[in-house]
Figure (cartoon, rainbow, N blue to C red):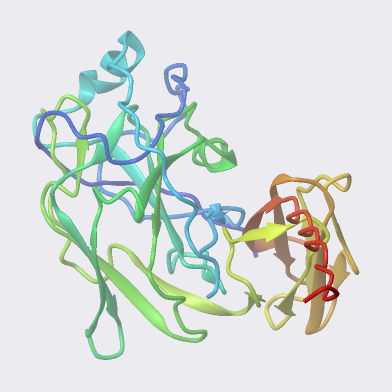
Length: 325
């Protein structure tokens, strides 16, 4: 099953200076000539968007929880951004792609991250609220303040930009409070000004149509016993349930440093237990990617743990003599 790539425009205009999403990724060159241009389109997402993290993805993050964001002032707009913005109007934030989405990329069960990819550089969260609703009854699952750095962070560019045909832009990761249920469907509403250009001149328009950003949750996935982002000790052995279910026929553990973290198995063709042993201090991310019958990646989830050294055992106090009482 091949992924279809397309783009949507959501329009915008907002407050001046917001420092909501951690560190801004580095500047990128102008988009290629064959990159998508402004205009309405279906939101799409590739099979390898994760969090995958996600953590990261992610990201990851329950299922996986969010990594703590580190707020920082995004850099000033550049000549590159100005060039990309020449075709933008006062009410347009430019092309944007959302994942997961119902156009070919489901959320992997066990993940709790959403991704927004903007062709424009230096997009930041605005004052508009995001609402997650359950499709079956339109009930509100969660309301999110995007300026909360525990909920929304600026992530590094990833391969999604290549698949979209963009030479860069802005990648925002939104982390949900709870893990969406397997087999359920959800959609997103966005208030006006949910996203904005850094200078505040451009605000995104509201999204109220349930079909613009909707997604289902796949039956395949990873359910860790300890949430992603947790603090652990060197030498700890963690575990997670890997669920390999149609349309997934294979799961592979990828993108890790075997000098830091190792696994009991690296490939799974059916539901199984994944064991993870941490060997060094610091952060240890890894990705579980799911493949279909044609060996196409159809989804992935990234988990990450930060290990520290076990505390030194306390020395026993010398025993006092009980003689000469």
